[in-house]
Length: 351
Ligand SMILES: Cc1cc2nc3c(=O)[nH]c(=O)nc-3n(C[C@H](O)[C@H](O)[C@H](O)COP(=O)(O)OP(=O)(O)OC[C@H]3O[C@@H](n4cnc5c(N)ncnc54)[C@H](O)[C@@H]3O)c2cc1C
Image (cartoon, rainbow, N blue to C red; front, side):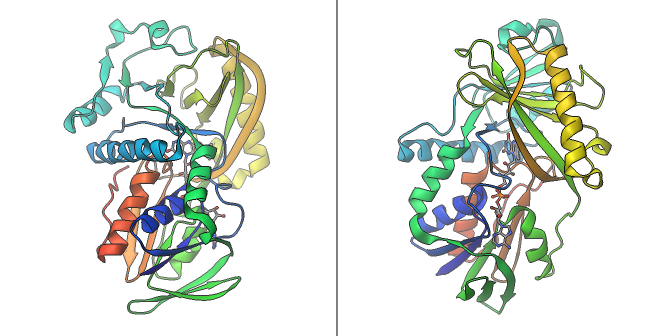
């Protein structure tokens, strides 16, 4: 069986890797540099903690594969920092974890000792959910591992058109037309246009998002990853934060939608987000320097939350979502198993 994968972000590369391990023939077509679009940057948060038991179970499957990849790569791809969620969702997410037997600790508001959590803040309203399986994914090391495993099957080629027939597909790329048995579209933002060619209509609303990295004053500290849904700094503003290398602390503020609107333009949104991040660090965090040392920008689908979405029509499969890095090994395996066995892939679709 021959499969074309469109897109060499973490999802496309994971899918190609899983297909190769099944003994399939694979070619990956990538417009630009691999891992340079939504998969760019130093790190991502891994967590089992989600608001839906299906997503917790899916992340648990991914955790097993992250461990396998770490073993094969010979260096740690997923850290052991743990992940903490603070805010009103903590109880519901704890229930979702309990439903599938995932290890966790829920700390009530009255018992919350912020210092004990190891987060760089002085005080927080509770409750808090601690996910001991969470940690920081090393994104560049993941990319290097997958690229090395896939070898020379990644082609610098833009895919303009996919034309499905009953049980094969023509993939029209900038380097020519490729006839394959199956195509997996994992093209991030580019998936919307390709999917529409086969009458699949993905959500089109995008917003701008930017993550800022600061130095930690004590470079020896390795705090847990932190998802803060308390809105305790400003109403409507939540954040995710994590260490992103020795002595580095990355922060993504999730702003009210009108501040991240696509129509405002990248320059204006990023400028405003930068001002807010600097103010946030100054007013809230302890042990974190006040100078930005790195920025990672991406366009992101506005409405997708934590869901993993897949649709198949004939020999074409399309995958999309907003928070896919942590699940990537499981997504790759799901898509490869489905392609090899000729069945529709099953993923949790909940938000
Ligand atoms: C700052 C930031 C923080 C994030 N934090 C987290 C987190 O903590 N945890 C988490 O799980 N997720 C997180 N995410 C989301 C996660 O990184 C993305 O969901 C994931 O990387 C998407 O991977 P992908 O392979 O689907 O897309 P991409 O990485 O965008 O890859 C798609 C590729 O397809 C290529 N392409 C597009 N069109 C075509 C075409 N027509 N022909 C050929 N190639 C094409 C593009 O060039 C691109 O390289 C974060 C994202 C960002 C940017």
